[in-house]
Structures are given as C-alpha cells and as structure tokens.
Length: 388
Ligand SMILES: *Cc1c(COP(=O)(O)O)cnc(C)c1O
Image (tube, rainbow, N blue to C red):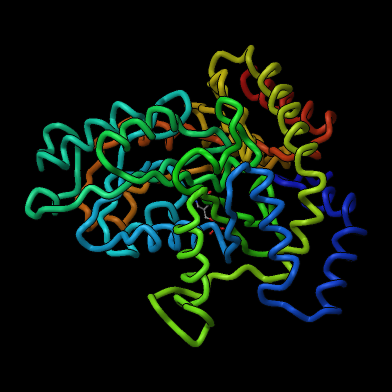
C-alpha cells in the first residue's frame, strides 16, 4: 500500500473525461496562448471569488510580482510580510528592489500578528529597531512605507479586518497571498477577495491545482486590472508591439485554463471533503497531549491546503511514520528572515521568536479530499503507537 501525501491520481480518475475533452478542444482550435478558455476561466473565477476582475497568469509567484509592479513598488519602498511562508512571498518584494520587512506570526494561526505589524510600522517610521527588529539598511536610509502582503498560511486567512485598518491608517496597500487559501472564507467572504488585490497559485499541489504552473490575481479596481493585463504581456499598450511600461511574460497557458475549468466543477465538493478529513484528524488526535492541533478561528473556513500539527519530537515522529510508509512534510523548516538569500537584510536568530519556534515543530500530515477513512485510521493509529 502506497500512501500519497496528496493524491492527484484519485482526482484525475474522477474527472479524466472532462479534462481530456477540454484539452482536446484546445488542441483542435490551436489558440494555446490567451485562448477562449482563459477568458472563460477568468470570468468563472471572478464570479466564484466575488471580485469585479480576475487576471489569470503564469504562476502564484508572478501573480504577486505583477501586483507589486502594478502598484509601482520600487527601490525606495518597504513592504511588510510574514517570515513564515513560502519563499515567493518575500522574494517578489526584493525582486522589485524594495525592502521586505518581516513581522512575526501569531502562535495560533501562524499568520502575521497585527500587533507586531503596528510595532514594525512604528519601528520603520522612527527608524528605531528597539521598537521592532527591522532590516539594518532602514536605520541608515529613508524609505517609503508602501504596503503589506498578508499570507493565508495552510488555508487559514490572515486577520484582514485588522490588517486593512492598519493599512488605512498608514496609507498602505494590502495584497492577500491566497496561494494556500483558495476556496476558504473569512467572515463569509471568499479568500482572495479580502484586500486591494488577492493572488493565488494553481501549482498542482495547491487546493485548486492545474497540471503545470498557473496563478490568478483578483481585484475590484478596473485600473489595476488593466495595468496587470498590460504587465502580463510585456507592458503592452494597444497591442503587444506597443510597449507602454515594463512587464513580463506572465500569461497562463490555455491548456492549463482548460484543465482548471474541469477541476472547478468539483472544487466546492473537494473543499467540503477537506473539512471532513481535517475534522476526523482533529477529533482523533485531540487526545494526545504532546500534539498541538491546527486552530481555525470561528470566523474562518480553512481551505486546508495543509493539515499541520506541532510536535516537539518531530524528527523522531517523521522517522517512525516513514518506517510505516506514511509520508510527511515540513512547511517551513527555515523562516525567511534566516534564509541565506535574505542575509543582506541583517536579521538574526531571535528576531522572529514565534516563527523560529513553530518552524522547529511544524509537521504536515497527508491531506487531500480523497483520503480514505482506512488510510486516515492507519495514520492516526501509527501516531498513537508512537506515543504509546
Ligand atoms: C505556492 C505559493 C506561492 C507561489 O506560487 P507558485 O505558483 O508556486 O509560483 C506563493 N505564496 C505561497 C504562500 C505559496 O504557498
């Protein structure tokens, strides 16, 4: 018996007919770039998320990058974000030339802590790292406070009511990195609709995954949507041979759009199945005192991109489960402020205590909508066996 961490094969068996039919249509009409399926997908995604506009693109990373470019982020700016996220979130800030300023996470949701955000803003404004740890260069040079990227980690939306209020007071934009929360909700509103711009990823392992790379940007601003469509095709003007700004090649393949159209039909059902799997895990694991379960606040519906527990004896548990052919993953072993790529910012160990502690104990268990009861029982019983 092979236990997959995410079972894309079970999903494919279910939707193969529709996927193949949709791909075949693309192969027949031959419009592989920005074909009709891309427009159809954008319309359906915008309706699903509840924003006026959706701009599909080549990946979640490019969704974030194109958003920052559209908001005119550059060398003299700082953008605040979480250090406990995938590299892409902070990487795109640095790629624009701006300075990423990290704000530590809340120990319950693993998302950016609004009180920390207030202090980090104060620290940057006063250029005073006794208020909050900030990059070295800010102490020596004046920067413009530009925006915040909130991250919806493991499927749980960040606290946008508070984040948006703080942003309003300080004239900052907010981007929602909803790469892991697509399909989730916050006070009844869909993930990716909770800030000025919402970004998501269709990397195969995300809640809504394509069969390759893909992403999407959501906004109610017609102006931003127009700029992002231009950036998506090298800053095109009236046509692609008139260039009115710098852009990138950020388009989604028509074939990926065709795949996503088939997957969108069953997506809500899959989100419901993820709730059931998560509830079963939590109900069973709750009786083990050494395990800290995921904590979803009342006002949030998680998309359950990952089911992560905290365990002090993580490495031993990983080995034990490996011996029983149960795959696990660690998201994320090293918080971004301690990654070598960001060493130029001058952060040191201890600056983001919660992220550092969580990164030592976090462990993701197999999670997908097709996880059968027998397999879940086997995983849970194996964990019980370990703690016996
Ligand atoms: C996956 C992910 C991204 C990047 O998406 P890609 O499609 O892989 O480029 C960005 N942010 C977060 C939080 C992610 O999980």
